[in-house]
Structures are given as structure tokens and as C-alpha cells.
Length: 334
Image (cartoon, rainbow, N blue to C red; front, top):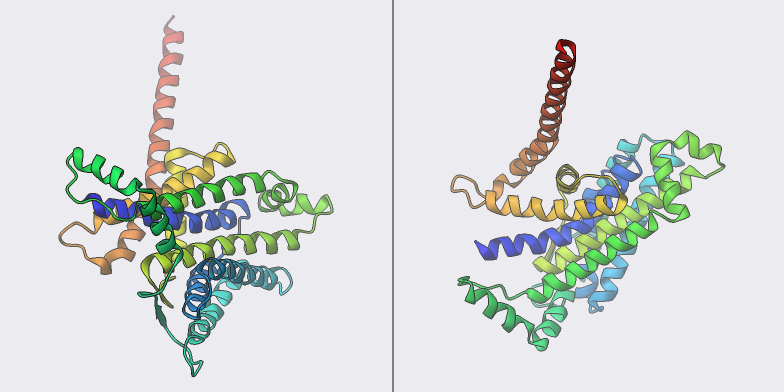
């Protein structure tokens, strides 16, 4: 049980980077971007291909981020310059990226043909380096001894992975908070709130939309590159339903922690991604469910996350009305 939850937290922290990207488009920019399903795989495919070709995992991850940024900018270009519906522009880019991702992974073959997946079982990744450094520090032993002292029989062997990824995610959150308070960030937020108003201030909304989509998909591709290195493989179908997972993380986090400030909202998105993975891990431990039910479980989680806050809000409003009516009735009697 502990190991499954620990693994869920690890994955949740990595997927939180993708959720932050989804938050930028759906909440900040108010743009229904479906490019995510393709750019996630683009990040994974680019990083995995470069690692197999002998490049540094760090360089491979940086190039994956740039590839995601370009993919997002192309979606923005289709919408702003091509005057294509935002939903359709995302779908078109997602479809195009499917073939592009196959071609990218095909670069690892001598014949340069399309390839649906890449294994990284014997390759050095960012996580193998992180784990080596962490193990050399000797912290693993102390943490494992602490867990065993409180009765945990099985202890994880990837503390370094969790700690480093957590630090990276927190750093990205801090940078995102800072960026959204800069002049450009405020202009992007204003574009999402009221495009016509921001145009009246002579702001170029087309450029802001393209930049916002580029940054969003750069984060998504970064998450895809990390997931590929974490799970030791990249597959062309690993991005299917990724937009739903990102939305689930955003909705769950906002429903639990609220959205009063930017700092609180981005923290809620990260927490939502972790909570979502934990819920998924616990659900898969139920006897009559199997890994093939993951998409169904995801859909149910999103439905509940959307409906439950409405039910709670209606109950609170009804209680407020009842209390107001009682107070008014008491004053009338007096």
C-alpha cells in the first residue's frame, strides 16, 4: 500500500507540471487547447530519441521543452493568423503531432521510418543521475530506517527522484507565479478575461495568445519528457486523454483549496495532480477494477469533481436562505 501511494505521489508531482500548463490555457488564457495530447508525447519522444542517440539527458529535456513550445505556438498561429476556431486548431495540431511524433521516434532507426515506441531500459536518464547523487549522500538509509521504525515493512528506493522532481515542480510554480504578475503575464491574463478590452490598450492579443500557448505546451512537453525518463519508455499513445487528466488535476485542486490568489491556485493545481494520482492508485487496488479501467476512473473523478462543489454550494446557499428567513421571521414577531 505504502509503495503504491509513494509511486502515485512521484507521478503526481511530475504530472503537476503538465497540469500547470493546462491551467495556463484553460483558466488564464481561456483557450480550450487540445494540443496537450500531442505535445505531451512530443516531449517524451524528443527526449527519448536524443537520449538513445547519445545526447545528455539534460540537453534532451531542454530540446523537448523547446519542441513543445513550438507546437503550442503553431496552435496559436493557426487560431490567430489562420482564423481557425480555437478548439479545432488544437485538434488539428494534435492530429499533426501524432505523425510528427512517429517520425521523431523513427530517427533512432537506421532506416529512419516511423516508430511507435522507444524503450529506455538500459539508458542513463536524469532520474538515474539524481538517484545516484541522492544515494551517495546517504539520506536514503536514514529515511528508510525511520519508516521501518514506524512499522512500514517495504520502503521505496527512489527518494532522490521524488525530492528532485518536487524541487523542480516547486521552482516552476514560483516562476509561473512571478511570470503571471509581470507586465506580459498580466496582459495574458487580461486577454483571457476580456480580449476586446486589452485590445483597446493597443496590446497585440495575437502575440499574447501565441506566447501563452507556447509556454503552456512547453510545460506539457517537459512533463512528458520526465515521464518518459521516469517510466523508461516513450509511446505514441501515452498522451491519449492527457487533457482530461490535466483538467481533473485543476478542477480537484480548485475545488479543495480555492482560487483566491494566483499563488494559491497554482499550489492547488499541484496538489490536485497529486491527489488525482493517489485516488487513481487506490481505485486500481479494488478487486473488480484493472488497469484497463483507468480512463473510466478518470472520467468518474472529473464528473465528481465538477458536480460535488455545485452540490456543496447549493446546500450552503439553501442554509443561508433558511437562516435569513428565520432571522426575518424573528424580527417580525418582535
